[in-house]
Length: 392
Length: 189
Image (cartoon, rainbow over all chains, first blue to last red):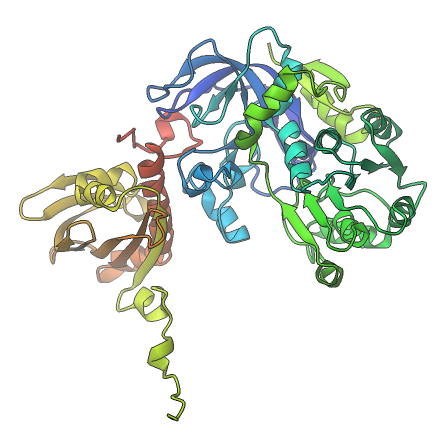
C-alpha cells in the first residue's frame, strides 16, 4: 500500500510499504477513507519528538471502513464505518475502567514502554503514528491501518454523513472539548484560548457550547483569528497588543476565569523568554520545550482560576512561574485526550447539528500530495488551517 | 504520666519490598518488580503455575517442558545466540499466593525466582511481585553471560510483568510488530 513515511527533519514522503495484517485477536484492519494532518504531527516533522525511526508511518487522525477483523473481535464487522481514536487503549486496565484511556497501562508494547517510563516515571499509552515512545504503531496517513484493541476504541458512524463531519472525533474535537471541560466552565465565565489552530478552535466551540460568557482567542495569523471570531470568540492579535494587559482591561482587572494553552512546546513570538527558550531548544541542552504560552496563561489567569493544557509538551521547561502558580491558588489540568470517553456524546452533537466540524478545513489533498500538505501546514499557517487527505 | 517513648528504627522500617540488599543479594544479577493486575488472584496464580504458559509472555523462553515432581525443562534464549537449557524445580508452592523455583545443580546458569500474588486491600485487583536472579557459570563463557546479564534481570522482570499483565487483562500481548515478528501469545480466555 501507499503511506506517508518519516525520514528525518522536514523530510516526509509517500512510499510503497507492506500492507498491515491482523496480529492479535482483537485487531481490525481499516481501509482509510479520510485522514488528517494534525498540528502535533508538525512536532514530528520538526523532529522535536524523540523516538522516531526512518520509515515510520505517520498519522493519528483517521477513519474508514472495516476491511478485516481478528478472531476475538465481537463488536466490529467487515463493512462497518468507524472513526478511530488516536489513543490506543485496552478497555480493561485500572485506567480504562476509570474512563482514562489516555493513561492505558497495556497498549504500549512492553519493550517500547521502557523509554517513556524512564522519561516520565510511568509509561505512556500506545498511539498511532507518534514515535516509538507511544509504541511505534504504524499511523493512518496510509491506505490501510491495523487497529489494535479495535473492539474498544473505534466508534461506528452512520452511513450518509460526510467523512469530514465525523473525522475529527479521532482527536481534535475531543481534545478541544476536554480542554474546555477541564476549565469547569460556570455560567458567565470568561475563557481565554491561546492558539487558534484546530484544537484551539474546537476548544472555543466547546467552551461556547458549555455556556462560557466570553471566549477570547489569541493568535497572530489573521485567517485563524477570523475563524475564531466566526465561531463567537473575541480576538487578540499578540503582534498588536500586550496579551496580559489586554485581558486585564477586557475583564476589568479580574482576569479570565480560565486559560487554555492550545499551543504547546513550539510557541512563536519574540518575547525575551521565548527567544532564550528557542536557543536552548535548538541546542537540546538546558531545556527542550518553549513554554512561553504556559507562562503567560499562569500570569494572566485570575486568582483561583484554571489553566488547561491540551498543547503538547514533551520534555523540560525552564523558568516555570511556580510563585504565581502557588500564590494565586491555581488549578492546572493537562493530559493527552481520553478520546474514547467522549465519543458517544460528541457524535451526538454532530448528528444533532449543534457543532460545525468542517469550517476549519482549508485543504483537501490526495495522499500522494501529503508532503506538500506538511510543508504548507508548517510554513503557511495563516492559509493552511487544516489538511484532510483522501487515500482512496 | 508515662514518659514519652522514642521510636526505634524497627518502628519506622520502610514498607517497600525493594531494599538494596534484597535486590542485589548474593546474586550476580537480580531484580524485584511489582505490578497491579486487574484480575482475580487465583486466576493469575493458576496461569503462572502452569509453567508451560511462561513462553507466552517471556520473550527469552523458547519453550518449557513440564517434567515430573514439580520439575520443568526451560529452553532459554541466551546472549549472543548462545541458547541454553536449564531444569527448574519448584521449591515453594502456596496455592493462590506464592511460587518459588530454582534451577537444579546441573544447569549452565544458576537461576532463581519467585512470584507472589496478594489481593489489593482496596479492591483494585491483585498485587503481583516478581523476583528473578541469575548467577552465571565460571569461565570465559560465564564472563560473557555475566556481562550481558548484568542489566538483564531488571529489564526482564519489568517487561515480563508488563506482558503478563497485558495477557491477563486484555487477552493478548500488545505489539506494533508485523505478525511474523510479534510475540507468541494468543487469547487465553
